[in-house]
Image 1 (cartoon, rainbow, N blue to C red):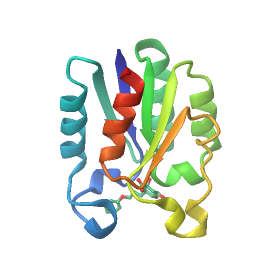
Image 2 (image 1 turned 180 degrees about the vertical axis):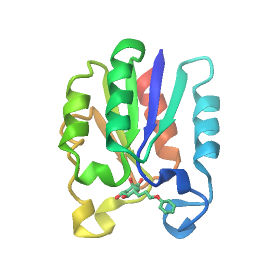
Image 3 (image 1 turned 180 degrees about the horizontal axis):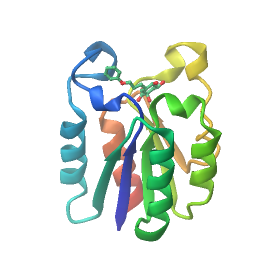
Length: 139
Ligand code: CA2
């Protein structure tokens, strides 16, 4: 099994700012942890971009090579119909992950365009959410 682990804008800053919300791990730490957790069960392809079009192109590429997508689209979660459309063109499983509990935060974070396409959503469990997503996808 091949899984695309996709991160959106500003998540490249993880571990460098706002640890009280997003924790102390860097994105590289999280990617390494997810790869280790999936070892022997799935190959994890990691990609992060601050650009909406690049995230969409990564989802398009996944239509060829990947069985599933784990996506934390960052703030695009709450704004991007274009990312939703790209995910709708992807046939595999989709799990949406958020590090923070977006429902305990500002109202504009409560809506997700991706949620209607996702097979599952994991919110507020920190980086453990990605491991749970791998377990779900490889069970
Ligand atoms: O909780 C999450 O995982 C979010 O997807 C994170 C996004 C936010 O816009 C969503 O509402 C919820 C923001 C990621 C920004 O990450 C930073 C990390 C360190 C320093 C600054 C931003």
